[in-house]
Length: 525
Image 1 (spheres, rainbow, N blue to C red):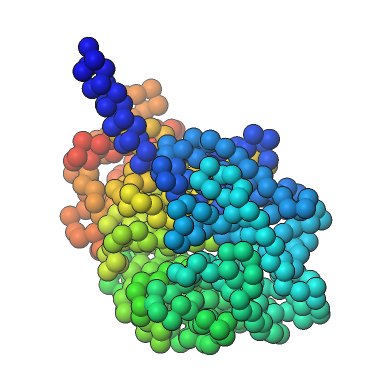
Image 2 (cartoon, one colour):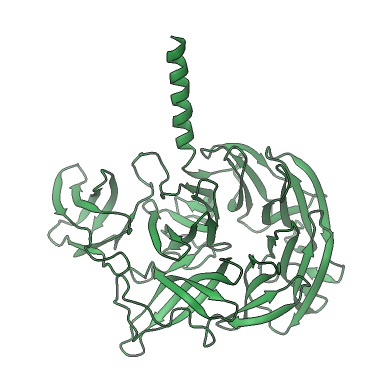
Protein backbone atom coordinates (compact mmCIF):
# COMPACT_ATOMS: atom_id res chain seq x y z
CA UNK A 1 0.00 0.00 0.00
CA UNK A 2 2.85 2.35 0.86
CA UNK A 3 4.48 1.74 -2.54
CA UNK A 4 1.15 2.40 -4.23
CA UNK A 5 0.71 5.74 -2.43
CA UNK A 6 4.29 6.68 -3.30
CA UNK A 7 3.61 5.88 -6.95
CA UNK A 8 0.44 7.99 -6.88
CA UNK A 9 2.33 10.90 -5.29
CA UNK A 10 5.08 10.65 -7.92
CA UNK A 11 2.47 10.60 -10.67
CA UNK A 12 0.86 13.74 -9.24
CA UNK A 13 4.23 15.48 -9.19
CA UNK A 14 4.86 14.54 -12.81
CA UNK A 15 1.41 15.72 -13.87
CA UNK A 16 1.75 18.99 -11.99
CA UNK A 17 5.23 19.46 -13.42
CA UNK A 18 3.87 19.04 -16.91
CA UNK A 19 1.11 21.54 -16.29
CA UNK A 20 3.70 24.09 -15.21
CA UNK A 21 4.73 24.54 -18.83
CA UNK A 22 1.56 26.27 -19.98
CA UNK A 23 -1.17 28.67 -18.92
CA UNK A 24 -3.45 31.41 -20.17
CA UNK A 25 -4.83 33.74 -17.50
CA UNK A 26 -7.12 36.76 -17.46
CA UNK A 27 -6.45 38.34 -14.08
CA UNK A 28 -8.57 40.85 -12.17
CA UNK A 29 -7.05 42.45 -9.07
CA UNK A 30 -8.77 41.97 -5.74
CA UNK A 31 -10.04 45.58 -5.75
CA UNK A 32 -11.25 45.46 -9.36
CA UNK A 33 -8.85 48.14 -10.60
CA UNK A 34 -7.72 48.40 -14.24
CA UNK A 35 -4.14 47.36 -14.91
CA UNK A 36 -2.28 45.98 -17.91
CA UNK A 37 0.47 43.36 -17.77
CA UNK A 38 3.96 44.64 -18.54
CA UNK A 39 7.32 43.11 -17.59
CA UNK A 40 7.87 39.67 -16.04
CA UNK A 41 10.51 37.67 -14.19
CA UNK A 42 10.62 33.91 -13.70
CA UNK A 43 10.95 32.82 -10.05
CA UNK A 44 13.15 29.95 -8.79
CA UNK A 45 10.13 27.61 -8.70
CA UNK A 46 9.15 28.64 -12.27
CA UNK A 47 6.37 30.95 -11.27
CA UNK A 48 6.39 34.57 -12.41
CA UNK A 49 6.43 38.08 -11.01
CA UNK A 50 4.60 40.46 -13.34
CA UNK A 51 4.59 44.24 -13.17
CA UNK A 52 1.27 45.85 -14.10
CA UNK A 53 0.68 49.52 -14.86
CA UNK A 54 -2.53 51.47 -14.54
CA UNK A 55 -4.61 51.31 -17.73
CA UNK A 56 -6.76 54.34 -16.92
CA UNK A 57 -4.48 57.38 -16.45
CA UNK A 58 -2.46 57.55 -13.23
CA UNK A 59 -5.28 57.39 -10.69
CA UNK A 60 -3.67 54.42 -8.96
CA UNK A 61 -0.25 52.96 -8.31
CA UNK A 62 1.23 50.08 -10.28
CA UNK A 63 0.66 46.50 -9.26
CA UNK A 64 3.13 43.64 -8.79
CA UNK A 65 1.73 40.11 -9.09
CA UNK A 66 3.28 36.85 -7.92
CA UNK A 67 1.97 33.92 -9.98
CA UNK A 68 2.47 30.20 -9.41
CA UNK A 69 3.93 27.98 -12.12
CA UNK A 70 0.42 27.26 -13.39
CA UNK A 71 -0.56 30.95 -13.45
CA UNK A 72 -2.57 31.23 -10.25
CA UNK A 73 -2.24 34.51 -8.33
CA UNK A 74 -0.40 34.01 -5.05
CA UNK A 75 0.14 37.61 -4.00
CA UNK A 76 -0.62 41.19 -5.03
CA UNK A 77 1.49 44.19 -4.09
CA UNK A 78 0.53 47.83 -4.64
CA UNK A 79 3.56 49.80 -3.52
CA UNK A 80 3.76 53.57 -3.05
CA UNK A 81 6.60 55.84 -2.03
CA UNK A 82 5.76 58.86 0.14
CA UNK A 83 2.14 58.48 -0.93
CA UNK A 84 3.12 58.81 -4.61
CA UNK A 85 2.19 56.28 -7.28
CA UNK A 86 4.56 54.12 -9.34
CA UNK A 87 4.39 53.09 -13.00
CA UNK A 88 6.94 50.40 -13.81
CA UNK A 89 9.39 50.78 -16.71
CA UNK A 90 11.58 47.75 -15.96
CA UNK A 91 11.78 44.55 -13.95
CA UNK A 92 15.20 42.93 -13.52
CA UNK A 93 17.05 40.16 -11.71
CA UNK A 94 20.32 41.53 -10.35
CA UNK A 95 23.31 39.54 -11.75
CA UNK A 96 25.36 37.55 -9.28
CA UNK A 97 22.73 37.65 -6.54
CA UNK A 98 21.03 34.49 -5.24
CA UNK A 99 17.61 35.92 -6.00
CA UNK A 100 17.40 39.67 -5.71
CA UNK A 101 15.16 41.66 -8.01
CA UNK A 102 14.75 45.27 -8.92
CA UNK A 103 11.74 47.17 -10.22
CA UNK A 104 12.37 50.58 -11.81
CA UNK A 105 9.43 52.96 -11.97
CA UNK A 106 8.50 56.53 -12.75
CA UNK A 107 6.94 58.36 -9.83
CA UNK A 108 3.58 59.95 -10.50
CA UNK A 109 1.65 62.46 -8.48
CA UNK A 110 -2.08 62.02 -8.00
CA UNK A 111 -2.73 64.69 -10.64
CA UNK A 112 -0.94 62.42 -13.19
CA UNK A 113 2.14 64.65 -13.65
CA UNK A 114 5.34 62.65 -13.90
CA UNK A 115 8.05 63.91 -11.57
CA UNK A 116 11.77 64.36 -12.20
CA UNK A 117 12.84 61.14 -10.50
CA UNK A 118 12.76 57.35 -10.67
CA UNK A 119 12.02 54.78 -7.98
CA UNK A 120 14.26 51.72 -7.46
CA UNK A 121 12.36 49.07 -5.50
CA UNK A 122 14.10 45.86 -4.45
CA UNK A 123 12.20 42.68 -3.58
CA UNK A 124 12.72 38.93 -3.18
CA UNK A 125 11.10 35.91 -4.80
CA UNK A 126 8.19 36.10 -2.34
CA UNK A 127 7.44 39.68 -3.40
CA UNK A 128 8.65 41.06 -0.08
CA UNK A 129 10.10 44.57 -0.36
CA UNK A 130 13.73 44.59 0.78
CA UNK A 131 14.66 48.17 -0.08
CA UNK A 132 13.69 51.33 -1.95
CA UNK A 133 15.65 54.30 -3.29
CA UNK A 134 14.93 57.44 -5.29
CA UNK A 135 17.04 58.60 -8.21
CA UNK A 136 16.61 62.37 -8.71
CA UNK A 137 17.67 64.12 -11.92
CA UNK A 138 17.36 67.75 -10.85
CA UNK A 139 14.67 70.29 -10.00
CA UNK A 140 14.80 71.93 -13.43
CA UNK A 141 13.47 68.75 -15.08
CA UNK A 142 9.72 69.22 -15.10
CA UNK A 143 8.73 65.88 -16.63
CA UNK A 144 10.19 62.42 -17.23
CA UNK A 145 7.48 61.65 -19.77
CA UNK A 146 6.50 63.67 -22.83
CA UNK A 147 3.25 62.83 -24.62
CA UNK A 148 2.85 59.75 -22.37
CA UNK A 149 6.08 58.16 -23.65
CA UNK A 150 7.52 56.63 -20.50
CA UNK A 151 11.30 56.14 -20.17
CA UNK A 152 12.85 52.90 -21.44
CA UNK A 153 15.31 50.97 -19.28
CA UNK A 154 17.58 47.93 -19.63
CA UNK A 155 19.92 46.08 -17.29
CA UNK A 156 23.50 45.72 -18.50
CA UNK A 157 25.72 42.69 -17.96
CA UNK A 158 27.56 44.52 -15.15
CA UNK A 159 24.32 45.01 -13.21
CA UNK A 160 23.89 48.72 -13.94
CA UNK A 161 20.72 50.22 -15.38
CA UNK A 162 20.65 52.32 -18.54
CA UNK A 163 17.68 54.61 -19.11
CA UNK A 164 16.54 56.80 -21.99
CA UNK A 165 13.75 59.32 -21.45
CA UNK A 166 11.89 62.02 -23.33
CA UNK A 167 11.87 64.90 -20.87
CA UNK A 168 11.30 68.61 -20.43
CA UNK A 169 13.87 70.81 -18.79
CA UNK A 170 12.66 74.32 -18.12
CA UNK A 171 11.11 75.39 -21.43
CA UNK A 172 13.05 73.02 -23.72
CA UNK A 173 12.75 69.36 -24.63
CA UNK A 174 15.53 66.78 -24.40
CA UNK A 175 16.45 63.15 -24.68
CA UNK A 176 17.95 62.22 -21.32
CA UNK A 177 20.43 59.33 -21.07
CA UNK A 178 21.53 57.95 -17.70
CA UNK A 179 23.46 55.01 -16.28
CA UNK A 180 22.68 54.10 -12.65
CA UNK A 181 23.55 51.42 -10.14
CA UNK A 182 20.92 49.28 -8.43
CA UNK A 183 20.66 51.78 -5.55
CA UNK A 184 19.58 54.49 -7.98
CA UNK A 185 22.84 56.41 -7.84
CA UNK A 186 23.68 58.14 -11.11
CA UNK A 187 26.99 56.99 -12.58
CA UNK A 188 26.80 59.00 -15.81
CA UNK A 189 24.14 61.26 -17.26
CA UNK A 190 23.85 63.30 -20.47
CA UNK A 191 21.12 65.12 -22.28
CA UNK A 192 20.52 65.95 -25.91
CA UNK A 193 18.42 68.98 -26.78
CA UNK A 194 16.14 68.58 -29.78
CA UNK A 195 13.77 70.91 -31.59
CA UNK A 196 11.18 68.23 -32.27
CA UNK A 197 11.00 65.59 -29.55
CA UNK A 198 9.13 62.61 -30.96
CA UNK A 199 8.49 58.99 -30.14
CA UNK A 200 11.03 56.81 -28.33
CA UNK A 201 10.56 53.32 -29.77
CA UNK A 202 12.95 50.94 -28.10
CA UNK A 203 16.15 50.48 -26.10
CA UNK A 204 18.17 47.27 -25.87
CA UNK A 205 21.61 46.30 -24.60
CA UNK A 206 24.27 45.01 -27.03
CA UNK A 207 25.78 41.60 -26.54
CA UNK A 208 29.40 42.73 -26.86
CA UNK A 209 32.41 43.88 -24.85
CA UNK A 210 31.77 47.58 -25.41
CA UNK A 211 28.67 47.50 -23.17
CA UNK A 212 26.83 49.91 -25.44
CA UNK A 213 23.10 50.04 -26.16
CA UNK A 214 20.96 50.68 -29.21
CA UNK A 215 18.23 53.32 -29.15
CA UNK A 216 15.45 53.34 -31.73
CA UNK A 217 13.68 56.68 -31.98
CA UNK A 218 11.72 58.79 -34.43
CA UNK A 219 13.46 62.04 -35.32
CA UNK A 220 11.57 62.93 -38.47
CA UNK A 221 8.01 62.28 -39.47
CA UNK A 222 7.83 58.73 -40.82
CA UNK A 223 11.53 58.01 -40.26
CA UNK A 224 13.06 56.04 -37.43
CA UNK A 225 16.76 56.14 -36.63
CA UNK A 226 19.10 53.68 -34.97
CA UNK A 227 21.53 55.31 -32.53
CA UNK A 228 24.40 53.85 -30.52
CA UNK A 229 24.51 54.80 -26.84
CA UNK A 230 27.98 54.05 -25.49
CA UNK A 231 29.22 53.59 -21.92
CA UNK A 232 29.93 57.33 -21.57
CA UNK A 233 26.26 58.09 -22.36
CA UNK A 234 27.24 59.63 -25.70
CA UNK A 235 25.11 58.90 -28.76
CA UNK A 236 26.12 58.48 -32.38
CA UNK A 237 23.98 57.90 -35.45
CA UNK A 238 24.22 54.39 -36.88
CA UNK A 239 21.67 54.52 -39.71
CA UNK A 240 18.09 55.27 -40.59
CA UNK A 241 15.82 52.25 -40.43
CA UNK A 242 12.92 53.49 -42.51
CA UNK A 243 13.15 55.58 -45.63
CA UNK A 244 16.14 55.33 -47.96
CA UNK A 245 19.17 54.44 -45.83
CA UNK A 246 18.26 50.85 -45.02
CA UNK A 247 15.81 48.73 -46.98
CA UNK A 248 14.87 46.04 -44.51
CA UNK A 249 12.98 43.98 -47.08
CA UNK A 250 13.85 45.50 -50.45
CA UNK A 251 13.42 42.12 -52.08
CA UNK A 252 11.93 38.82 -50.96
CA UNK A 253 10.89 35.42 -52.33
CA UNK A 254 7.19 34.73 -52.95
CA UNK A 255 5.21 35.04 -49.75
CA UNK A 256 1.89 33.69 -48.46
CA UNK A 257 -1.58 35.02 -49.20
CA UNK A 258 -2.94 37.42 -50.31
CA UNK A 259 -0.30 38.21 -52.93
CA UNK A 260 2.75 36.54 -54.41
CA UNK A 261 5.16 39.29 -53.47
CA UNK A 262 8.14 39.39 -55.81
CA UNK A 263 10.87 41.83 -56.80
CA UNK A 264 8.34 44.17 -58.45
CA UNK A 265 7.34 45.24 -54.93
CA UNK A 266 9.03 47.76 -52.71
CA UNK A 267 8.71 47.90 -48.95
CA UNK A 268 8.60 50.69 -46.43
CA UNK A 269 9.35 49.50 -42.93
CA UNK A 270 7.81 50.49 -39.61
CA UNK A 271 10.31 49.06 -37.14
CA UNK A 272 10.10 49.54 -33.43
CA UNK A 273 11.79 46.69 -31.55
CA UNK A 274 15.27 45.24 -31.43
CA UNK A 275 17.23 42.42 -29.82
CA UNK A 276 20.94 41.70 -29.70
CA UNK A 277 21.97 38.68 -31.79
CA UNK A 278 25.74 38.51 -31.28
CA UNK A 279 28.65 40.92 -30.81
CA UNK A 280 28.29 42.39 -34.29
CA UNK A 281 24.64 42.02 -35.35
CA UNK A 282 21.16 42.51 -33.96
CA UNK A 283 17.57 41.80 -34.91
CA UNK A 284 15.05 44.47 -35.87
CA UNK A 285 11.34 43.76 -36.12
CA UNK A 286 8.09 45.62 -36.66
CA UNK A 287 5.31 46.29 -39.12
CA UNK A 288 6.11 46.55 -42.79
CA UNK A 289 3.94 48.31 -45.34
CA UNK A 290 4.39 46.93 -48.83
CA UNK A 291 3.18 48.46 -52.03
CA UNK A 292 3.47 47.97 -55.76
CA UNK A 293 4.16 51.11 -57.74
CA UNK A 294 2.02 49.82 -60.59
CA UNK A 295 -1.31 48.24 -59.75
CA UNK A 296 -1.96 49.86 -56.39
CA UNK A 297 -1.60 46.67 -54.30
CA UNK A 298 -0.80 47.55 -50.69
CA UNK A 299 -0.87 45.87 -47.31
CA UNK A 300 0.90 45.22 -44.03
CA UNK A 301 2.97 42.34 -42.68
CA UNK A 302 5.48 41.56 -39.95
CA UNK A 303 9.20 41.41 -40.63
CA UNK A 304 12.40 40.50 -38.85
CA UNK A 305 15.84 41.44 -40.17
CA UNK A 306 19.39 40.75 -39.02
CA UNK A 307 21.34 44.01 -39.29
CA UNK A 308 24.97 44.95 -38.60
CA UNK A 309 26.25 48.24 -37.18
CA UNK A 310 26.52 49.78 -40.64
CA UNK A 311 22.88 49.06 -41.42
CA UNK A 312 23.62 46.23 -43.83
CA UNK A 313 20.77 43.73 -43.89
CA UNK A 314 22.31 40.28 -43.52
CA UNK A 315 18.98 38.45 -43.86
CA UNK A 316 15.26 39.09 -43.45
CA UNK A 317 11.94 37.28 -43.17
CA UNK A 318 8.32 38.33 -43.69
CA UNK A 319 5.24 36.66 -42.21
CA UNK A 320 1.70 37.45 -40.99
CA UNK A 321 0.90 39.17 -44.25
CA UNK A 322 -2.36 41.13 -44.11
CA UNK A 323 -5.18 38.65 -44.43
CA UNK A 324 -8.22 40.91 -44.58
CA UNK A 325 -8.88 44.58 -45.21
CA UNK A 326 -8.17 46.51 -42.03
CA UNK A 327 -6.52 43.55 -40.27
CA UNK A 328 -3.00 44.85 -39.82
CA UNK A 329 -0.53 43.06 -37.56
CA UNK A 330 1.06 45.17 -34.82
CA UNK A 331 4.12 43.97 -32.93
CA UNK A 332 3.92 43.90 -29.15
CA UNK A 333 4.05 47.44 -27.79
CA UNK A 334 6.98 47.54 -25.34
CA UNK A 335 9.03 44.45 -26.25
CA UNK A 336 8.20 42.29 -29.27
CA UNK A 337 11.29 40.06 -29.43
CA UNK A 338 12.64 37.60 -26.87
CA UNK A 339 15.50 35.10 -27.00
CA UNK A 340 15.86 31.84 -25.12
CA UNK A 341 18.49 29.22 -25.90
CA UNK A 342 18.66 28.86 -29.66
CA UNK A 343 15.21 30.39 -30.28
CA UNK A 344 13.85 33.85 -30.97
CA UNK A 345 10.18 34.65 -30.29
CA UNK A 346 8.03 37.42 -31.75
CA UNK A 347 4.68 38.56 -30.32
CA UNK A 348 2.09 40.51 -32.27
CA UNK A 349 -1.63 41.22 -32.48
CA UNK A 350 -3.83 40.87 -35.56
CA UNK A 351 -6.75 43.25 -35.97
CA UNK A 352 -6.08 46.18 -33.65
CA UNK A 353 -5.90 49.72 -35.01
CA UNK A 354 -2.97 50.70 -32.80
CA UNK A 355 -1.84 50.37 -29.18
CA UNK A 356 -4.16 53.08 -27.86
CA UNK A 357 -6.53 50.47 -26.34
CA UNK A 358 -9.45 51.00 -28.68
CA UNK A 359 -11.18 47.67 -28.06
CA UNK A 360 -12.08 45.62 -31.11
CA UNK A 361 -11.81 41.87 -31.76
CA UNK A 362 -8.20 40.80 -32.16
CA UNK A 363 -5.97 37.72 -32.21
CA UNK A 364 -2.57 37.21 -30.59
CA UNK A 365 0.07 35.78 -32.93
CA UNK A 366 3.30 34.21 -31.63
CA UNK A 367 6.10 33.14 -33.99
CA UNK A 368 9.16 31.10 -33.12
CA UNK A 369 12.39 31.37 -35.15
CA UNK A 370 15.76 29.77 -34.83
CA UNK A 371 18.82 32.04 -34.68
CA UNK A 372 19.09 31.86 -38.48
CA UNK A 373 15.54 33.29 -38.61
CA UNK A 374 13.92 30.16 -40.02
CA UNK A 375 10.28 29.97 -38.90
CA UNK A 376 9.71 26.98 -36.61
CA UNK A 377 6.02 27.58 -35.88
CA UNK A 378 3.17 30.08 -35.71
CA UNK A 379 0.51 30.06 -32.99
CA UNK A 380 -2.74 32.03 -32.87
CA UNK A 381 -4.77 32.79 -29.74
CA UNK A 382 -8.18 34.43 -29.61
CA UNK A 383 -11.77 33.99 -28.47
CA UNK A 384 -14.75 35.10 -30.55
CA UNK A 385 -15.19 38.85 -30.19
CA UNK A 386 -12.50 39.23 -27.48
CA UNK A 387 -9.92 42.02 -27.46
CA UNK A 388 -6.22 41.39 -26.82
CA UNK A 389 -3.20 43.67 -26.81
CA UNK A 390 0.32 42.46 -25.99
CA UNK A 391 2.89 44.68 -24.31
CA UNK A 392 5.88 42.42 -23.61
CA UNK A 393 7.22 38.97 -24.53
CA UNK A 394 10.00 37.31 -22.51
CA UNK A 395 11.85 34.01 -22.87
CA UNK A 396 11.49 31.34 -20.17
CA UNK A 397 13.86 28.77 -18.71
CA UNK A 398 12.09 25.82 -20.36
CA UNK A 399 12.75 27.29 -23.81
CA UNK A 400 9.27 28.76 -24.17
CA UNK A 401 7.93 32.28 -23.71
CA UNK A 402 5.50 34.37 -21.68
CA UNK A 403 3.43 37.27 -23.03
CA UNK A 404 1.69 39.94 -20.97
CA UNK A 405 -0.84 42.62 -21.86
CA UNK A 406 -4.59 43.25 -21.79
CA UNK A 407 -7.71 41.18 -22.37
CA UNK A 408 -11.32 42.29 -22.63
CA UNK A 409 -14.20 39.96 -23.33
CA UNK A 410 -16.78 42.68 -23.74
CA UNK A 411 -14.71 45.06 -25.84
CA UNK A 412 -15.22 47.72 -23.20
CA UNK A 413 -12.50 50.09 -22.01
CA UNK A 414 -13.77 49.66 -18.45
CA UNK A 415 -13.62 45.86 -18.59
CA UNK A 416 -9.88 45.25 -19.03
CA UNK A 417 -8.18 42.29 -17.37
CA UNK A 418 -4.46 41.61 -17.05
CA UNK A 419 -3.52 39.03 -19.67
CA UNK A 420 -0.73 36.46 -19.21
CA UNK A 421 0.01 33.68 -21.71
CA UNK A 422 2.73 31.08 -21.10
CA UNK A 423 3.74 28.78 -23.98
CA UNK A 424 6.25 25.97 -23.88
CA UNK A 425 8.96 25.43 -26.50
CA UNK A 426 6.49 23.61 -28.75
CA UNK A 427 4.01 26.46 -28.63
CA UNK A 428 1.09 25.09 -26.65
CA UNK A 429 -0.74 26.37 -23.59
CA UNK A 430 -2.32 23.19 -22.21
CA UNK A 431 -1.38 19.54 -21.82
CA UNK A 432 -3.67 18.14 -24.48
CA UNK A 433 -6.70 20.12 -23.35
CA UNK A 434 -8.87 21.35 -26.20
CA UNK A 435 -11.46 24.06 -26.21
CA UNK A 436 -12.35 27.65 -26.96
CA UNK A 437 -9.41 30.00 -26.75
CA UNK A 438 -6.63 27.40 -26.78
CA UNK A 439 -3.57 28.07 -28.88
CA UNK A 440 -4.14 27.07 -32.49
CA UNK A 441 -1.45 26.26 -35.08
CA UNK A 442 -3.49 27.81 -37.89
CA UNK A 443 -5.39 30.99 -38.71
CA UNK A 444 -8.85 30.92 -40.30
CA UNK A 445 -10.09 33.96 -42.22
CA UNK A 446 -12.25 35.77 -43.07
CA UNK A 447 -14.81 35.24 -40.33
CA UNK A 448 -17.65 36.01 -41.05
CA UNK A 449 -17.22 34.58 -44.55
CA UNK A 450 -19.37 34.55 -47.65
CA UNK A 451 -18.12 32.31 -50.46
CA UNK A 452 -14.94 30.75 -49.05
CA UNK A 453 -12.69 30.30 -46.00
CA UNK A 454 -8.88 30.48 -45.99
CA UNK A 455 -6.86 28.44 -43.50
CA UNK A 456 -3.20 29.33 -43.05
CA UNK A 457 -1.26 26.51 -41.35
CA UNK A 458 1.88 26.73 -39.26
CA UNK A 459 4.88 25.07 -40.99
CA UNK A 460 5.08 22.39 -38.27
CA UNK A 461 1.47 21.21 -38.88
CA UNK A 462 0.13 18.63 -41.30
CA UNK A 463 -3.64 18.77 -41.62
CA UNK A 464 -5.59 15.54 -42.12
CA UNK A 465 -9.03 17.09 -42.69
CA UNK A 466 -11.29 20.06 -42.12
CA UNK A 467 -14.89 19.40 -41.09
CA UNK A 468 -17.82 21.78 -40.76
CA UNK A 469 -20.67 21.01 -38.37
CA UNK A 470 -24.02 22.68 -37.87
CA UNK A 471 -24.59 24.32 -34.50
CA UNK A 472 -26.55 21.24 -33.38
CA UNK A 473 -23.57 18.94 -34.12
CA UNK A 474 -24.52 17.58 -37.55
CA UNK A 475 -21.62 17.09 -40.01
CA UNK A 476 -22.35 19.10 -43.15
CA UNK A 477 -19.01 19.27 -45.02
CA UNK A 478 -15.68 17.42 -45.05
CA UNK A 479 -12.51 18.61 -46.81
CA UNK A 480 -9.79 15.93 -46.72
CA UNK A 481 -6.06 16.46 -47.34
CA UNK A 482 -6.23 20.22 -46.98
CA UNK A 483 -2.60 21.01 -46.10
CA UNK A 484 -0.64 22.79 -48.84
CA UNK A 485 2.00 20.61 -50.47
CA UNK A 486 4.52 23.38 -51.08
CA UNK A 487 7.27 24.41 -48.68
CA UNK A 488 6.29 26.46 -45.58
CA UNK A 489 8.11 29.57 -46.84
CA UNK A 490 6.05 29.83 -50.01
CA UNK A 491 2.85 27.96 -49.16
CA UNK A 492 -0.56 29.41 -49.91
CA UNK A 493 -3.42 29.08 -47.45
CA UNK A 494 -5.92 26.33 -48.05
CA UNK A 495 -9.18 27.69 -49.48
CA UNK A 496 -12.42 25.81 -48.88
CA UNK A 497 -15.68 26.55 -50.65
CA UNK A 498 -18.63 27.28 -48.33
CA UNK A 499 -20.90 28.94 -50.90
CA UNK A 500 -23.45 26.14 -50.63
CA UNK A 501 -23.94 26.55 -46.87
CA UNK A 502 -27.03 28.27 -45.52
CA UNK A 503 -26.17 31.53 -43.70
CA UNK A 504 -25.70 30.96 -40.00
CA UNK A 505 -23.25 29.81 -37.31
CA UNK A 506 -21.16 26.66 -37.80
CA UNK A 507 -18.43 24.76 -35.98
CA UNK A 508 -15.12 24.34 -37.83
CA UNK A 509 -13.05 21.31 -36.78
CA UNK A 510 -9.44 20.95 -37.93
CA UNK A 511 -7.81 17.53 -37.51
CA UNK A 512 -4.05 17.08 -37.81
CA UNK A 513 -2.03 13.99 -38.64
CA UNK A 514 -0.63 13.82 -35.09
CA UNK A 515 -4.14 13.21 -33.73
CA UNK A 516 -4.94 16.70 -32.45
CA UNK A 517 -8.27 18.39 -33.08
CA UNK A 518 -9.11 22.10 -32.95
CA UNK A 519 -12.54 23.70 -33.06
CA UNK A 520 -13.87 27.22 -33.47
CA UNK A 521 -17.05 28.96 -34.51
CA UNK A 522 -17.43 30.42 -37.98
CA UNK A 523 -20.20 32.56 -39.43
CA UNK A 524 -21.52 32.09 -42.96
CA UNK A 525 -23.06 35.30 -44.25
